[in-house]
Image (cartoon, rainbow, N blue to C red; front, side, top):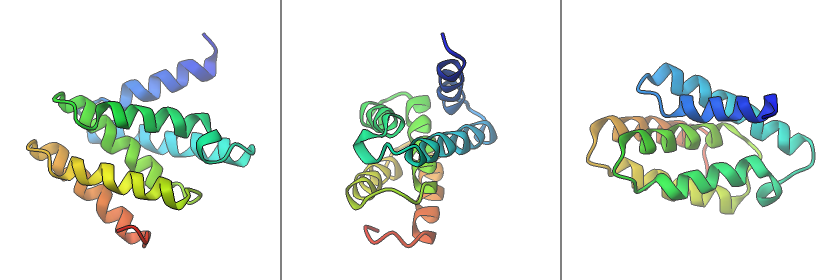
Length: 127
């Protein structure tokens, strides 16, 4: 396994952590991976990192496992940090975040509200 894939696997593992600091650190690394891929000319759906993250969120956003949902909030947090997303990506992320805010688990809802505040601070028009 290449070092790059191993590090991505490690990031995904840390996104499922119970520790918010560990999840936030992994989310920051994800934002860097997305930005690096965009800088190398892979935009939007052509960005393999974005496509993989979106697939993980779509798969796990409605999961009954708290770690799956916390992973989703961390991934969405990383995506909100990326300033190069198009309108369709922003709309999708905002919708997914709304699902997470209405979860019955207070930990997930609290994390999602924190990400939503960050999204509002960026003044996304889809809010």
